[in-house]
Image (cartoon, rainbow, N blue to C red; front, side, top):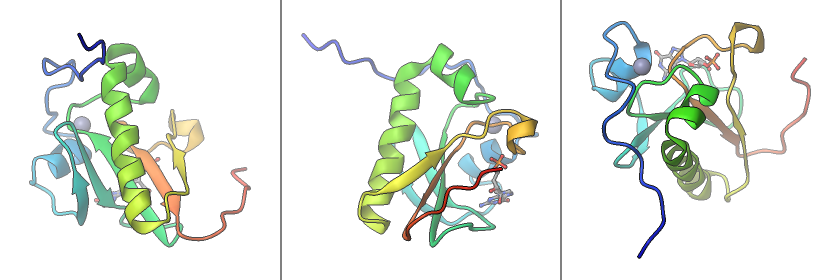
Length: 127
Ligand code: 5GP
Ligand code: ZN
Protein backbone atom coordinates (compact mmCIF):
# COMPACT_ATOMS: atom_id res chain seq x y z
CA UNK A 1 0.00 0.00 0.00
CA UNK A 2 1.39 3.35 -0.94
CA UNK A 3 1.35 6.15 1.57
CA UNK A 4 2.43 8.76 -0.95
CA UNK A 5 0.17 11.76 -0.83
CA UNK A 6 -1.32 12.94 -4.05
CA UNK A 7 -2.31 16.51 -4.72
CA UNK A 8 -5.89 17.28 -3.94
CA UNK A 9 -8.11 17.46 -6.98
CA UNK A 10 -10.82 19.30 -5.12
CA UNK A 11 -8.97 22.45 -4.53
CA UNK A 12 -9.30 25.38 -2.39
CA UNK A 13 -8.39 27.35 -5.36
CA UNK A 14 -10.79 27.50 -8.25
CA UNK A 15 -9.53 29.55 -11.17
CA UNK A 16 -9.75 33.25 -10.46
CA UNK A 17 -10.77 35.30 -13.50
CA UNK A 18 -8.79 38.25 -12.20
CA UNK A 19 -5.61 36.28 -11.50
CA UNK A 20 -2.88 36.61 -14.13
CA UNK A 21 -1.39 33.18 -13.45
CA UNK A 22 -4.79 31.44 -13.43
CA UNK A 23 -5.28 33.00 -16.85
CA UNK A 24 -1.88 31.74 -18.04
CA UNK A 25 -2.70 28.24 -16.74
CA UNK A 26 -6.01 28.41 -18.62
CA UNK A 27 -4.26 29.50 -21.82
CA UNK A 28 -6.12 32.83 -21.84
CA UNK A 29 -2.90 34.85 -21.53
CA UNK A 30 0.03 33.76 -23.68
CA UNK A 31 3.23 32.54 -22.04
CA UNK A 32 6.24 30.49 -23.07
CA UNK A 33 5.40 27.23 -21.37
CA UNK A 34 8.45 24.99 -20.93
CA UNK A 35 7.00 22.08 -18.94
CA UNK A 36 3.74 20.87 -17.54
CA UNK A 37 2.51 18.16 -15.23
CA UNK A 38 -0.89 17.06 -14.09
CA UNK A 39 -0.89 19.62 -11.32
CA UNK A 40 1.61 22.34 -12.30
CA UNK A 41 2.77 24.53 -15.17
CA UNK A 42 6.21 26.07 -15.82
CA UNK A 43 6.69 29.11 -18.03
CA UNK A 44 9.42 31.67 -18.67
CA UNK A 45 9.43 34.84 -16.61
CA UNK A 46 8.66 37.84 -18.82
CA UNK A 47 11.54 39.79 -17.21
CA UNK A 48 14.30 37.23 -16.63
CA UNK A 49 16.84 37.90 -13.86
CA UNK A 50 19.12 34.95 -14.70
CA UNK A 51 19.96 32.92 -17.83
CA UNK A 52 17.29 30.46 -16.71
CA UNK A 53 14.30 32.12 -15.03
CA UNK A 54 11.17 30.04 -15.10
CA UNK A 55 8.06 30.37 -12.95
CA UNK A 56 6.43 27.20 -11.67
CA UNK A 57 2.81 27.44 -10.53
CA UNK A 58 0.19 24.99 -9.36
CA UNK A 59 -2.81 24.81 -11.66
CA UNK A 60 -5.02 25.50 -8.64
CA UNK A 61 -5.08 28.98 -7.20
CA UNK A 62 -3.40 29.46 -3.84
CA UNK A 63 -2.27 32.87 -2.65
CA UNK A 64 1.27 32.04 -1.52
CA UNK A 65 3.56 29.20 -0.55
CA UNK A 66 2.47 29.20 3.09
CA UNK A 67 -1.18 28.85 2.12
CA UNK A 68 -0.30 26.14 -0.37
CA UNK A 69 1.80 24.18 2.11
CA UNK A 70 -1.02 24.28 4.67
CA UNK A 71 -3.80 23.40 2.23
CA UNK A 72 -2.13 20.83 0.00
CA UNK A 73 1.48 19.87 0.78
CA UNK A 74 1.54 17.28 -1.98
CA UNK A 75 0.73 20.01 -4.47
CA UNK A 76 3.70 22.02 -3.20
CA UNK A 77 5.82 18.93 -3.75
CA UNK A 78 4.48 18.72 -7.30
CA UNK A 79 5.53 22.35 -7.89
CA UNK A 80 9.03 21.60 -6.59
CA UNK A 81 9.27 18.47 -8.73
CA UNK A 82 8.36 20.37 -11.90
CA UNK A 83 10.92 23.06 -11.01
CA UNK A 84 13.54 20.33 -10.65
CA UNK A 85 12.54 18.90 -14.03
CA UNK A 86 13.04 22.32 -15.65
CA UNK A 87 16.36 22.86 -13.89
CA UNK A 88 17.63 19.44 -14.97
CA UNK A 89 16.72 20.25 -18.56
CA UNK A 90 18.08 23.80 -18.61
CA UNK A 91 20.52 24.37 -15.74
CA UNK A 92 22.31 21.12 -14.99
CA UNK A 93 19.96 20.42 -12.10
CA UNK A 94 21.41 23.21 -9.94
CA UNK A 95 19.10 26.06 -9.19
CA UNK A 96 17.63 28.51 -6.72
CA UNK A 97 13.93 28.19 -5.97
CA UNK A 98 12.40 31.41 -4.62
CA UNK A 99 8.89 31.92 -3.32
CA UNK A 100 8.40 35.60 -2.60
CA UNK A 101 5.75 35.76 0.11
CA UNK A 102 4.01 39.07 0.73
CA UNK A 103 4.43 42.43 -0.93
CA UNK A 104 7.37 43.40 1.27
CA UNK A 105 9.33 40.44 -0.09
CA UNK A 106 8.58 41.44 -3.67
CA UNK A 107 5.52 39.28 -4.33
CA UNK A 108 3.49 41.03 -7.01
CA UNK A 109 1.32 38.19 -8.30
CA UNK A 110 -0.76 36.53 -5.60
CA UNK A 111 -0.94 33.08 -7.17
CA UNK A 112 1.88 31.11 -5.63
CA UNK A 113 4.86 30.70 -7.94
CA UNK A 114 8.37 29.39 -7.52
CA UNK A 115 11.07 31.28 -9.38
CA UNK A 116 13.51 28.70 -10.79
CA UNK A 117 16.77 30.62 -11.26
CA UNK A 118 19.92 29.12 -12.70
CA UNK A 119 22.22 28.77 -15.65
CA UNK A 120 25.01 30.80 -14.03
CA UNK A 121 26.73 31.18 -10.66
CA UNK A 122 24.21 33.24 -8.74
CA UNK A 123 25.05 36.10 -6.44
CA UNK A 124 23.42 36.57 -3.05
CA UNK A 125 22.17 40.06 -2.46
CA UNK A 126 18.42 40.00 -1.95
CA UNK A 127 18.44 43.23 0.03
P1 5GP B 1 6.81 38.06 -7.87
O1 5GP B 1 7.33 39.46 -7.95
O2 5GP B 1 5.33 38.02 -7.55
O3 5GP B 1 7.62 37.15 -7.00
O4 5GP B 1 7.01 37.46 -9.31
C1 5GP B 1 6.15 37.74 -10.36
C2 5GP B 1 6.93 37.49 -11.62
O5 5GP B 1 6.00 37.41 -12.69
C3 5GP B 1 7.92 38.60 -11.95
O6 5GP B 1 9.23 38.07 -11.99
C4 5GP B 1 7.44 39.11 -13.30
O7 5GP B 1 8.51 39.41 -14.17
C5 5GP B 1 6.61 37.96 -13.82
N1 5GP B 1 5.51 38.36 -14.69
C6 5GP B 1 4.66 39.41 -14.49
N2 5GP B 1 3.76 39.45 -15.47
C7 5GP B 1 4.04 38.39 -16.30
C8 5GP B 1 3.43 37.91 -17.50
O8 5GP B 1 2.45 38.43 -18.00
N3 5GP B 1 4.00 36.80 -18.06
C9 5GP B 1 5.10 36.20 -17.53
N4 5GP B 1 5.58 35.12 -18.19
N5 5GP B 1 5.68 36.62 -16.39
C10 5GP B 1 5.15 37.71 -15.79
ZN1 ZN C 1 -4.54 32.23 -9.68
